[in-house]
Image (cartoon, rainbow, N blue to C red; front, side, top):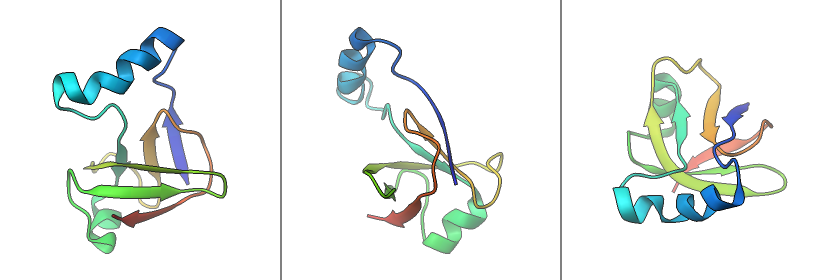
Length: 88
């Protein structure tokens, strides 16, 4: 299951967010994962991963955090849904 938090509050922020990586060198979208789940998938901090749903997909860097429960993902600015995750 994916849990998300909306990061894009208005159209102006969406324009800024698209350039966030260029300006800061940090992603504005990411996927947080439990260390055990990351190890199972062969993922480490910063690795690119593809989060897939029936409708769409997101490719973003992985952030490994022990605060994330096992079998749960957190993806910024996405939606709550059932999804799969794979290493890119």
